[in-house]
Length: 262
Ligand SMILES: [Zn+2]
Ligand SMILES: [Zn+2]
Image 1: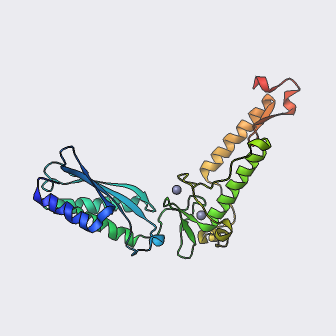
Image 2: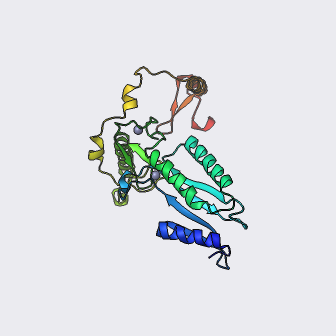
């Protein structure tokens, strides 16, 4: 598998431990040039409570282990950038300390331990943009995306309603499609019972958020721009309605405007 015995021993040990979870890449001559493994937190066999994961990709440059391996962390789920940055740093240090000896299993263990300690999504729910508190009920999709169950219920109901409205616009013989819920982030198919999700409480942070809405400076600028656009459209004789993209003629048009001179 590798000319260097230190490396072939290391790869054999990794295969014995990780079994089908590790993929070793070889060149045409059968020499191992890299490997890939998806890492999950330690939760015994309970995959339902694994909320974070990432893929460790290692390429073995000629001369490894006397030369440091190239390590890439890809497909992170539920992990924020600061955690990934500090993980990268820790791996870099480990590689520097271990020059001359195999280091891949140690890298694997560093990641596994970090994932186990952060086995709670540290990214916010993309539906409500609030984080996950201890008491929040949340749903992990098969694609490893997280939503408050409450938020996901709302999203699924809304998307099914939109789907039905679109279907109703079609002639009956074209109304053949059935609704398939999709993950709001990656659009993978997801299947959940909305009634069950709906029994979850709203996210805690949302509940605690101040009730009075305070527009941000960016939003104020946007409001001003939209108002200017609205006034210009009105003075030119027609307002484009966003919801159904129709042109509403305004009084200022004095009957001269039509849809062609926008
Ligand atoms: Zn949410
Ligand atoms: Zn997804």
